[in-house]
Length: 491
Image 1 (cartoon, rainbow, N blue to C red):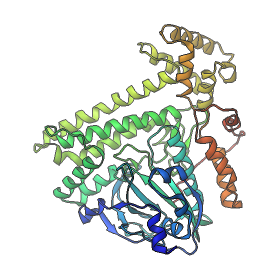
Image 2 (tube, rainbow, N blue to C red):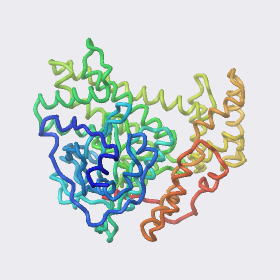
Image 3 (cartoon, rainbow, N blue to C red):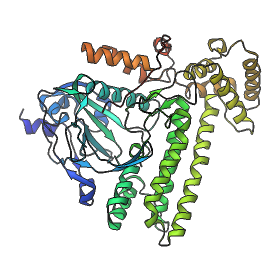
Image 4 (tube, rainbow, N blue to C red):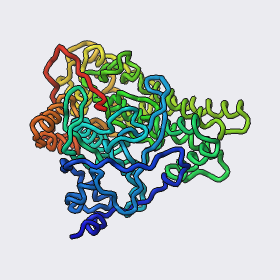
Protein backbone atom coordinates (compact mmCIF):
# COMPACT_ATOMS: atom_id res chain seq x y z
CA UNK A 1 0.00 0.00 0.00
CA UNK A 2 1.44 3.34 -0.97
CA UNK A 3 1.84 6.13 1.54
CA UNK A 4 -0.68 8.39 -0.23
CA UNK A 5 -3.23 5.60 -0.57
CA UNK A 6 -3.03 4.60 3.10
CA UNK A 7 -3.60 8.18 4.24
CA UNK A 8 -6.56 8.52 1.87
CA UNK A 9 -8.07 5.27 3.10
CA UNK A 10 -7.88 6.54 6.67
CA UNK A 11 -11.08 8.48 5.97
CA UNK A 12 -9.91 12.02 6.47
CA UNK A 13 -12.51 14.37 4.97
CA UNK A 14 -11.18 17.85 5.60
CA UNK A 15 -12.42 21.37 5.22
CA UNK A 16 -10.73 24.53 6.49
CA UNK A 17 -13.35 27.13 7.28
CA UNK A 18 -11.24 28.76 10.01
CA UNK A 19 -8.51 29.41 7.45
CA UNK A 20 -11.01 31.51 5.50
CA UNK A 21 -11.37 33.97 8.38
CA UNK A 22 -9.30 37.18 8.54
CA UNK A 23 -5.59 36.35 8.51
CA UNK A 24 -5.07 38.24 11.77
CA UNK A 25 -6.68 35.47 13.85
CA UNK A 26 -4.28 32.67 12.91
CA UNK A 27 -0.87 31.82 11.51
CA UNK A 28 -0.34 29.05 8.98
CA UNK A 29 2.12 26.66 10.58
CA UNK A 30 3.28 23.11 9.91
CA UNK A 31 3.89 20.72 12.81
CA UNK A 32 7.51 20.08 13.75
CA UNK A 33 8.36 16.47 12.83
CA UNK A 34 9.35 14.10 15.62
CA UNK A 35 12.02 11.42 15.71
CA UNK A 36 10.19 8.12 16.13
CA UNK A 37 6.45 8.31 16.81
CA UNK A 38 4.72 5.38 18.45
CA UNK A 39 0.98 4.97 18.99
CA UNK A 40 0.18 4.55 22.69
CA UNK A 41 -3.60 4.64 22.68
CA UNK A 42 -6.29 5.09 20.04
CA UNK A 43 -9.93 5.84 20.75
CA UNK A 44 -11.53 3.31 18.41
CA UNK A 45 -15.20 4.27 19.00
CA UNK A 46 -14.48 7.96 18.54
CA UNK A 47 -12.47 7.26 15.39
CA UNK A 48 -15.32 5.26 13.92
CA UNK A 49 -17.83 8.01 14.75
CA UNK A 50 -15.63 10.47 12.86
CA UNK A 51 -15.67 8.25 9.78
CA UNK A 52 -12.06 7.13 10.22
CA UNK A 53 -10.59 3.71 9.49
CA UNK A 54 -9.15 2.43 12.77
CA UNK A 55 -6.81 -0.02 11.09
CA UNK A 56 -5.42 2.66 8.77
CA UNK A 57 -4.89 5.01 11.71
CA UNK A 58 -2.77 2.33 13.38
CA UNK A 59 -0.52 1.97 10.34
CA UNK A 60 2.84 3.72 10.11
CA UNK A 61 1.35 6.37 7.86
CA UNK A 62 -1.64 6.84 10.14
CA UNK A 63 0.60 7.30 13.16
CA UNK A 64 2.77 9.71 11.18
CA UNK A 65 -0.30 11.96 10.73
CA UNK A 66 -1.13 11.78 14.46
CA UNK A 67 2.47 12.80 15.19
CA UNK A 68 2.51 15.68 12.71
CA UNK A 69 5.14 14.01 10.51
CA UNK A 70 2.77 13.81 7.55
CA UNK A 71 0.04 16.22 6.47
CA UNK A 72 -3.00 14.52 4.92
CA UNK A 73 -4.43 15.83 1.69
CA UNK A 74 -6.78 18.74 2.31
CA UNK A 75 -5.34 19.74 5.68
CA UNK A 76 -4.15 23.31 6.27
CA UNK A 77 -2.47 23.33 9.69
CA UNK A 78 -2.62 26.60 11.59
CA UNK A 79 -2.08 28.07 15.03
CA UNK A 80 -4.97 30.11 16.39
CA UNK A 81 -4.42 33.47 18.03
CA UNK A 82 -6.34 34.35 21.18
CA UNK A 83 -5.98 36.31 24.39
CA UNK A 84 -7.20 35.75 27.90
CA UNK A 85 -7.47 36.75 31.51
CA UNK A 86 -5.17 34.38 33.36
CA UNK A 87 -5.97 34.52 37.07
CA UNK A 88 -7.51 37.91 36.37
CA UNK A 89 -4.60 39.35 34.38
CA UNK A 90 -5.03 40.03 30.67
CA UNK A 91 -2.42 38.55 28.31
CA UNK A 92 -1.85 37.99 24.61
CA UNK A 93 -1.85 34.22 24.09
CA UNK A 94 -2.43 31.73 21.27
CA UNK A 95 -1.74 28.12 20.35
CA UNK A 96 1.74 27.88 21.81
CA UNK A 97 2.07 24.12 21.50
CA UNK A 98 -0.94 23.09 19.44
CA UNK A 99 -2.05 23.25 15.84
CA UNK A 100 -5.44 22.97 14.25
CA UNK A 101 -4.70 20.27 11.68
CA UNK A 102 -8.03 20.76 9.92
CA UNK A 103 -11.78 20.29 10.34
CA UNK A 104 -13.14 16.78 9.82
CA UNK A 105 -16.56 16.53 8.16
CA UNK A 106 -18.18 13.32 9.41
CA UNK A 107 -20.58 11.10 7.49
CA UNK A 108 -23.42 12.83 9.35
CA UNK A 109 -22.22 16.20 8.09
CA UNK A 110 -20.91 17.32 11.47
CA UNK A 111 -17.83 19.55 11.56
CA UNK A 112 -15.22 19.01 14.28
CA UNK A 113 -11.73 20.36 14.85
CA UNK A 114 -8.80 17.96 14.74
CA UNK A 115 -6.00 19.46 16.82
CA UNK A 116 -2.49 18.20 17.53
CA UNK A 117 -1.37 19.20 21.03
CA UNK A 118 2.38 19.13 21.63
CA UNK A 119 3.22 19.52 17.94
CA UNK A 120 6.03 22.07 18.27
CA UNK A 121 6.70 25.78 18.47
CA UNK A 122 4.40 28.40 16.98
CA UNK A 123 4.57 32.20 16.85
CA UNK A 124 2.56 32.16 20.09
CA UNK A 125 4.87 29.86 22.09
CA UNK A 126 6.26 32.68 24.25
CA UNK A 127 9.67 31.05 24.73
CA UNK A 128 8.09 27.62 25.26
CA UNK A 129 9.31 24.53 23.46
CA UNK A 130 5.92 23.76 21.95
CA UNK A 131 6.06 20.19 23.17
CA UNK A 132 4.08 18.16 25.68
CA UNK A 133 4.99 15.41 28.11
CA UNK A 134 3.41 11.96 28.07
CA UNK A 135 1.88 12.14 31.55
CA UNK A 136 -0.24 15.28 31.01
CA UNK A 137 -1.40 14.07 27.59
CA UNK A 138 -2.54 10.73 29.01
CA UNK A 139 -4.18 12.63 31.85
CA UNK A 140 -6.21 14.68 29.37
CA UNK A 141 -7.16 11.50 27.55
CA UNK A 142 -8.41 9.84 30.75
CA UNK A 143 -10.30 12.81 32.16
CA UNK A 144 -11.86 14.01 28.92
CA UNK A 145 -13.15 10.53 28.09
CA UNK A 146 -14.45 10.14 31.65
CA UNK A 147 -16.29 13.45 31.30
CA UNK A 148 -17.83 12.30 28.03
CA UNK A 149 -19.06 9.11 29.69
CA UNK A 150 -20.54 11.18 32.53
CA UNK A 151 -22.63 13.05 29.96
CA UNK A 152 -20.74 16.33 30.24
CA UNK A 153 -19.95 18.33 27.11
CA UNK A 154 -16.23 18.08 26.47
CA UNK A 155 -13.47 18.03 23.92
CA UNK A 156 -12.39 14.45 23.35
CA UNK A 157 -9.17 12.56 22.84
CA UNK A 158 -8.61 10.57 19.67
CA UNK A 159 -5.06 9.37 20.27
CA UNK A 160 -1.79 9.80 22.11
CA UNK A 161 1.53 9.09 20.44
CA UNK A 162 4.99 9.27 21.95
CA UNK A 163 7.59 11.19 19.98
CA UNK A 164 10.81 9.36 20.77
CA UNK A 165 12.12 12.65 22.15
CA UNK A 166 12.38 14.06 25.66
CA UNK A 167 10.86 17.23 27.05
CA UNK A 168 12.30 19.02 30.02
CA UNK A 169 10.11 20.41 32.77
CA UNK A 170 11.18 19.89 36.38
CA UNK A 171 12.67 16.63 35.13
CA UNK A 172 13.32 14.92 31.81
CA UNK A 173 10.12 13.30 30.56
CA UNK A 174 9.05 11.38 27.45
CA UNK A 175 7.43 13.60 24.86
CA UNK A 176 3.97 12.97 23.45
CA UNK A 177 1.31 14.44 21.17
CA UNK A 178 -2.42 14.31 21.88
CA UNK A 179 -4.95 14.43 19.05
CA UNK A 180 -7.88 16.43 20.37
CA UNK A 181 -11.35 16.55 18.84
CA UNK A 182 -13.56 19.56 19.54
CA UNK A 183 -16.78 21.10 18.28
CA UNK A 184 -14.44 24.04 17.76
CA UNK A 185 -11.63 25.81 19.58
CA UNK A 186 -13.45 29.14 19.62
CA UNK A 187 -12.99 30.65 23.07
CA UNK A 188 -13.93 33.74 25.02
CA UNK A 189 -10.25 34.57 24.56
CA UNK A 190 -10.66 34.39 20.78
CA UNK A 191 -13.04 37.33 20.92
CA UNK A 192 -10.86 39.14 23.43
CA UNK A 193 -8.00 38.93 20.95
CA UNK A 194 -10.07 40.23 18.04
CA UNK A 195 -11.62 42.95 20.18
CA UNK A 196 -8.20 44.22 21.27
CA UNK A 197 -6.10 43.74 18.13
CA UNK A 198 -8.53 43.26 15.25
CA UNK A 199 -10.74 45.58 13.25
CA UNK A 200 -14.49 46.07 13.51
CA UNK A 201 -14.79 43.95 10.36
CA UNK A 202 -12.70 41.20 11.96
CA UNK A 203 -14.98 41.16 15.00
CA UNK A 204 -18.11 40.92 12.89
CA UNK A 205 -16.59 38.17 10.76
CA UNK A 206 -15.68 36.16 13.87
CA UNK A 207 -19.14 36.61 15.37
CA UNK A 208 -20.85 35.60 12.12
CA UNK A 209 -18.58 32.55 11.87
CA UNK A 210 -19.39 31.48 15.43
CA UNK A 211 -23.11 31.86 14.80
CA UNK A 212 -22.93 29.85 11.60
CA UNK A 213 -20.90 27.10 13.21
CA UNK A 214 -22.65 26.71 16.56
CA UNK A 215 -25.93 28.63 16.52
CA UNK A 216 -27.28 28.57 12.94
CA UNK A 217 -30.90 28.66 14.13
CA UNK A 218 -30.84 32.43 14.74
CA UNK A 219 -34.04 34.14 13.59
CA UNK A 220 -33.62 36.70 10.83
CA UNK A 221 -35.52 39.27 12.89
CA UNK A 222 -33.39 38.79 16.00
CA UNK A 223 -30.41 40.80 17.14
CA UNK A 224 -27.91 38.21 15.88
CA UNK A 225 -25.14 39.13 18.23
CA UNK A 226 -27.35 39.35 21.29
CA UNK A 227 -28.56 35.86 20.36
CA UNK A 228 -24.92 34.71 20.24
CA UNK A 229 -24.28 36.07 23.73
CA UNK A 230 -27.47 34.57 25.15
CA UNK A 231 -26.81 31.13 23.68
CA UNK A 232 -23.23 31.00 24.96
CA UNK A 233 -24.52 31.97 28.40
CA UNK A 234 -27.13 29.18 28.30
CA UNK A 235 -24.59 26.54 27.33
CA UNK A 236 -22.14 27.60 30.00
CA UNK A 237 -24.88 27.59 32.64
CA UNK A 238 -25.62 23.96 31.78
CA UNK A 239 -21.94 23.02 31.67
CA UNK A 240 -20.90 24.55 34.98
CA UNK A 241 -23.93 23.05 36.73
CA UNK A 242 -22.89 19.62 35.48
CA UNK A 243 -19.34 20.18 36.75
CA UNK A 244 -20.68 21.01 40.19
CA UNK A 245 -23.04 18.04 40.23
CA UNK A 246 -20.19 15.54 39.82
CA UNK A 247 -17.61 17.40 41.90
CA UNK A 248 -15.34 18.33 38.99
CA UNK A 249 -12.82 21.12 39.52
CA UNK A 250 -11.34 22.55 36.34
CA UNK A 251 -8.47 24.26 38.10
CA UNK A 252 -7.66 26.97 35.59
CA UNK A 253 -10.83 28.77 34.46
CA UNK A 254 -9.04 31.49 32.55
CA UNK A 255 -11.09 33.14 29.81
CA UNK A 256 -9.04 31.38 27.14
CA UNK A 257 -10.22 28.07 28.65
CA UNK A 258 -13.93 28.80 28.16
CA UNK A 259 -15.35 27.60 24.86
CA UNK A 260 -18.23 29.21 23.03
CA UNK A 261 -19.57 25.79 22.06
CA UNK A 262 -20.13 24.91 25.73
CA UNK A 263 -17.54 22.13 25.84
CA UNK A 264 -15.07 21.60 28.67
CA UNK A 265 -11.56 22.27 27.38
CA UNK A 266 -7.94 22.15 28.58
CA UNK A 267 -7.52 19.48 31.23
CA UNK A 268 -4.43 20.79 32.97
CA UNK A 269 -4.61 20.87 36.78
CA UNK A 270 -8.17 19.50 36.93
CA UNK A 271 -9.34 16.87 39.41
CA UNK A 272 -12.46 15.44 41.04
CA UNK A 273 -13.35 16.18 44.63
CA UNK A 274 -13.35 13.41 47.23
CA UNK A 275 -14.46 14.97 50.54
CA UNK A 276 -17.10 17.61 49.92
CA UNK A 277 -15.69 21.07 50.51
CA UNK A 278 -16.63 24.28 48.71
CA UNK A 279 -13.06 25.55 49.14
CA UNK A 280 -11.42 22.57 47.44
CA UNK A 281 -8.47 23.52 45.24
CA UNK A 282 -6.02 21.09 43.65
CA UNK A 283 -4.01 23.30 41.30
CA UNK A 284 -0.53 24.08 42.58
CA UNK A 285 -0.68 27.55 41.03
CA UNK A 286 -4.09 28.57 42.42
CA UNK A 287 -2.67 29.69 45.74
CA UNK A 288 -5.56 32.07 46.54
CA UNK A 289 -8.37 29.69 45.54
CA UNK A 290 -9.66 31.82 42.69
CA UNK A 291 -10.82 28.70 40.87
CA UNK A 292 -11.93 26.66 43.89
CA UNK A 293 -14.90 24.33 43.48
CA UNK A 294 -17.35 26.74 45.11
CA UNK A 295 -16.10 29.69 43.04
CA UNK A 296 -16.59 28.09 39.63
CA UNK A 297 -20.11 29.46 38.96
CA UNK A 298 -19.04 33.00 39.87
CA UNK A 299 -15.91 32.77 37.74
CA UNK A 300 -17.98 31.52 34.80
CA UNK A 301 -20.19 34.60 35.15
CA UNK A 302 -17.11 36.83 35.29
CA UNK A 303 -15.68 35.22 32.17
CA UNK A 304 -18.96 35.63 30.32
CA UNK A 305 -18.99 39.31 31.23
CA UNK A 306 -15.62 39.62 29.52
CA UNK A 307 -17.14 37.95 26.44
CA UNK A 308 -20.05 40.38 26.51
CA UNK A 309 -17.64 43.31 26.57
CA UNK A 310 -16.10 42.17 23.29
CA UNK A 311 -19.52 42.14 21.62
CA UNK A 312 -20.58 45.66 22.63
CA UNK A 313 -19.82 47.22 19.20
CA UNK A 314 -22.08 44.62 17.59
CA UNK A 315 -24.97 44.69 20.06
CA UNK A 316 -26.15 48.23 19.33
CA UNK A 317 -24.87 51.37 17.63
CA UNK A 318 -25.59 53.26 20.84
CA UNK A 319 -22.95 52.34 23.42
CA UNK A 320 -25.23 52.90 26.40
CA UNK A 321 -27.90 50.67 24.88
CA UNK A 322 -25.30 48.04 24.02
CA UNK A 323 -24.12 47.97 27.63
CA UNK A 324 -27.71 47.61 28.84
CA UNK A 325 -28.33 44.64 26.52
CA UNK A 326 -25.11 42.98 27.65
CA UNK A 327 -25.80 43.53 31.34
CA UNK A 328 -29.32 42.13 31.04
CA UNK A 329 -28.01 39.02 29.30
CA UNK A 330 -25.22 38.45 31.81
CA UNK A 331 -27.62 38.92 34.72
CA UNK A 332 -29.51 35.83 33.47
CA UNK A 333 -26.51 33.55 33.97
CA UNK A 334 -26.83 33.15 37.74
CA UNK A 335 -30.50 32.23 37.46
CA UNK A 336 -29.90 29.82 34.57
CA UNK A 337 -27.03 28.16 36.41
CA UNK A 338 -29.07 27.86 39.60
CA UNK A 339 -32.01 26.35 37.70
CA UNK A 340 -29.79 23.68 36.12
CA UNK A 341 -27.95 22.95 39.36
CA UNK A 342 -31.16 22.64 41.38
CA UNK A 343 -32.77 20.38 38.78
CA UNK A 344 -29.66 18.20 38.82
CA UNK A 345 -29.60 18.05 42.60
CA UNK A 346 -33.26 17.05 42.71
CA UNK A 347 -32.44 14.19 40.33
CA UNK A 348 -29.51 13.12 42.51
CA UNK A 349 -32.00 12.75 45.37
CA UNK A 350 -34.68 11.02 43.30
CA UNK A 351 -37.02 14.01 43.23
CA UNK A 352 -39.19 14.45 40.15
CA UNK A 353 -41.32 17.49 40.94
CA UNK A 354 -40.63 20.83 42.59
CA UNK A 355 -41.33 22.06 46.11
CA UNK A 356 -40.23 25.33 47.65
CA UNK A 357 -38.27 23.65 50.45
CA UNK A 358 -36.22 21.43 48.13
CA UNK A 359 -33.23 23.75 48.17
CA UNK A 360 -33.21 23.79 51.95
CA UNK A 361 -33.22 19.98 51.94
CA UNK A 362 -30.30 19.91 49.49
CA UNK A 363 -28.28 22.52 51.34
CA UNK A 364 -28.87 20.68 54.59
CA UNK A 365 -27.26 17.56 53.15
CA UNK A 366 -24.33 19.45 51.65
CA UNK A 367 -23.73 21.30 54.91
CA UNK A 368 -23.51 18.01 56.79
CA UNK A 369 -21.22 16.59 54.12
CA UNK A 370 -18.86 19.54 54.50
CA UNK A 371 -18.95 19.36 58.29
CA UNK A 372 -18.13 15.64 58.36
CA UNK A 373 -15.88 15.67 55.27
CA UNK A 374 -18.10 13.09 53.67
CA UNK A 375 -17.08 11.77 50.27
CA UNK A 376 -19.19 13.54 47.65
CA UNK A 377 -19.63 10.74 45.13
CA UNK A 378 -19.95 7.88 47.59
CA UNK A 379 -22.49 9.69 49.77
CA UNK A 380 -24.90 10.05 46.87
CA UNK A 381 -24.11 6.50 45.77
CA UNK A 382 -25.03 5.19 49.25
CA UNK A 383 -28.29 7.15 49.23
CA UNK A 384 -29.09 5.78 45.78
CA UNK A 385 -29.07 2.23 47.08
CA UNK A 386 -30.65 3.08 50.43
CA UNK A 387 -27.47 2.30 52.35
CA UNK A 388 -27.10 5.34 54.61
CA UNK A 389 -24.91 3.29 56.93
CA UNK A 390 -22.21 3.43 54.25
CA UNK A 391 -21.80 7.19 54.72
CA UNK A 392 -19.74 9.02 57.32
CA UNK A 393 -22.92 10.91 58.22
CA UNK A 394 -24.66 7.83 59.58
CA UNK A 395 -25.21 7.74 63.32
CA UNK A 396 -25.55 11.49 63.80
CA UNK A 397 -28.80 12.99 64.98
CA UNK A 398 -28.77 15.65 62.30
CA UNK A 399 -28.47 13.06 59.54
CA UNK A 400 -31.29 10.96 61.01
CA UNK A 401 -33.50 14.04 60.99
CA UNK A 402 -32.47 14.94 57.45
CA UNK A 403 -33.08 11.37 56.24
CA UNK A 404 -36.58 11.45 57.69
CA UNK A 405 -37.32 14.73 55.89
CA UNK A 406 -35.97 13.32 52.64
CA UNK A 407 -38.08 10.17 52.85
CA UNK A 408 -41.15 12.28 53.57
CA UNK A 409 -40.33 14.41 50.52
CA UNK A 410 -40.12 11.34 48.30
CA UNK A 411 -43.42 10.17 49.72
CA UNK A 412 -45.18 13.33 48.55
CA UNK A 413 -44.57 12.67 44.86
CA UNK A 414 -46.58 10.38 42.62
CA UNK A 415 -43.63 8.38 41.33
CA UNK A 416 -42.91 5.13 43.20
CA UNK A 417 -39.70 4.48 45.10
CA UNK A 418 -38.38 2.28 42.28
CA UNK A 419 -38.62 5.20 39.86
CA UNK A 420 -36.80 7.48 42.28
CA UNK A 421 -34.01 4.95 42.65
CA UNK A 422 -33.68 4.63 38.88
CA UNK A 423 -33.48 8.40 38.56
CA UNK A 424 -30.75 8.44 41.20
CA UNK A 425 -28.86 5.60 39.51
CA UNK A 426 -28.76 7.62 36.29
CA UNK A 427 -27.78 10.83 38.10
CA UNK A 428 -25.18 9.60 40.59
CA UNK A 429 -22.09 7.96 39.12
CA UNK A 430 -20.68 4.86 40.76
CA UNK A 431 -17.18 5.92 39.79
CA UNK A 432 -15.27 9.07 38.92
CA UNK A 433 -11.60 9.41 37.95
CA UNK A 434 -10.34 9.22 41.53
CA UNK A 435 -7.13 11.19 41.80
CA UNK A 436 -5.10 8.33 43.24
CA UNK A 437 -6.34 5.99 40.50
CA UNK A 438 -5.37 8.47 37.80
CA UNK A 439 -1.92 8.92 39.37
CA UNK A 440 -1.42 5.15 39.57
CA UNK A 441 -2.25 4.82 35.89
CA UNK A 442 0.07 7.65 34.88
CA UNK A 443 2.95 6.38 37.00
CA UNK A 444 2.68 2.89 35.52
CA UNK A 445 2.53 4.30 32.00
CA UNK A 446 5.28 6.90 32.23
CA UNK A 447 7.73 5.18 34.55
CA UNK A 448 7.25 1.52 33.64
CA UNK A 449 5.76 1.68 30.17
CA UNK A 450 2.81 -0.33 31.50
CA UNK A 451 -0.46 0.86 29.99
CA UNK A 452 -2.63 -1.92 31.42
CA UNK A 453 -3.48 0.08 34.55
CA UNK A 454 -4.72 2.96 32.42
CA UNK A 455 -6.66 0.67 30.10
CA UNK A 456 -8.47 -0.95 33.03
CA UNK A 457 -9.26 2.46 34.48
CA UNK A 458 -10.62 3.71 31.15
CA UNK A 459 -12.81 0.63 30.86
CA UNK A 460 -14.31 1.18 34.32
CA UNK A 461 -14.86 4.89 33.68
CA UNK A 462 -16.58 4.28 30.34
CA UNK A 463 -19.87 3.32 32.06
CA UNK A 464 -20.00 5.40 35.24
CA UNK A 465 -23.72 4.81 35.80
CA UNK A 466 -23.57 1.02 35.44
CA UNK A 467 -23.12 0.47 39.18
CA UNK A 468 -21.54 -2.89 38.43
CA UNK A 469 -19.66 -5.06 40.95
CA UNK A 470 -16.46 -4.51 38.95
CA UNK A 471 -16.60 -0.80 39.77
CA UNK A 472 -16.66 -1.22 43.55
CA UNK A 473 -12.88 -1.29 43.94
CA UNK A 474 -12.57 1.95 41.98
CA UNK A 475 -14.88 3.81 44.36
CA UNK A 476 -12.62 3.33 47.39
CA UNK A 477 -10.89 6.35 48.85
CA UNK A 478 -7.13 6.90 48.89
CA UNK A 479 -5.07 6.27 51.98
CA UNK A 480 -4.80 9.21 54.37
CA UNK A 481 -1.87 11.48 53.61
CA UNK A 482 -0.21 14.35 55.40
CA UNK A 483 0.24 16.09 52.04
CA UNK A 484 -2.84 17.42 50.23
CA UNK A 485 -3.21 16.24 46.66
CA UNK A 486 -1.92 18.74 44.10
CA UNK A 487 -2.16 18.93 40.33
CA UNK A 488 0.06 20.74 37.85
CA UNK A 489 -0.53 22.30 34.45
CA UNK A 490 2.01 20.07 32.71
CA UNK A 491 2.88 22.77 30.18
